[in-house]
Amino acid sequence: MDEHLTTRQVAEALSVSESSVKRWCDSGDIPTVRTVGGHRRIPLAGFMEFLEETKRQVVSPLLPTNRLRDVGTRVDPVGELGDPKALFLQALKDGDENRCRKVLTTAYASRESMAWLADEFIMATFQTIGQQWDCGDLEIYQERRGCEICSRLLHELRRLIPEVPQNGPLAIGGAPAGDQYTLPTQIVELVLRENGWRTMNLGSNLPLPTIAAAVQQHQPRMLWLSVSHLEDQEAFVSGYAKLADVLPKETVVVIGGRALTDDLRPRLKYHGHCDNMQQLALFAAAMHGKRHTLNSSDN
Image 1 (cartoon, helix red, strand yellow):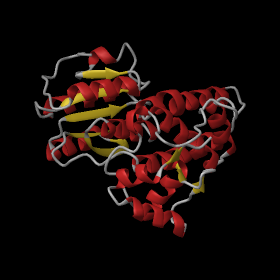
Image 2 (cartoon, rainbow, N blue to C red):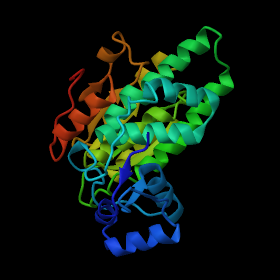
Image 3 (tube, rainbow, N blue to C red):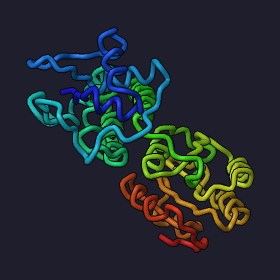
């Protein structure tokens, strides 16, 4: 169920000559298969391994017009091997990182959207894992191991997103104190990068004053807060109000996360609230190069 690339696609993505890519294929640096006609084809997962090992980054989009071209026979991600979401869930539960990589990269190639991948695959799968955990059908270590696997795979997928120019708008963000979940804010970073934003992911479990210090120092166009868990809601509201008061006027605030309930959000000041990553992608694309004034509960 792997997607395969042509040597021309890889050469264009890396801004190198096609002869260089063919040489890497023939030397074994890039995993390669041959078609019936003898043409080189590069598994997407193998290309990602090459990027990771060589610390290379694509400089132009790898998968044009939401599909792979000239790759011979393409296998539908929902094809003969079954439902990819079910495969991904089982691979995570089994701790099979290689199988997770194959399913995830094929799914990403089929849509060329990190936001879609996050909503329909990663977050949906972890919601199922959480439900099975609550029912006693899954061990805690399996959920934690799955998070670590996903984090590593997202790091690999990052290399498929071209670097944003230095004059691109800057977004800074993370998760507040008490929130130990790293995947949501890691995904936010990739979604924003995919939509033309330079990013600075500060990580999870961050006191709001240190987030304010980062914003004041770097003057970003956007601040994102991913809030999956709150230990003390009142302390968060108070700290958030202080954060909002010191933000630069040019900084747009975007919030999201399951801990931001309908009762809590009206007590916060922000420009946008996103229930999922696809909403964030739309917001980020619309905000690119624009400025707004901070209003209470403006979503």
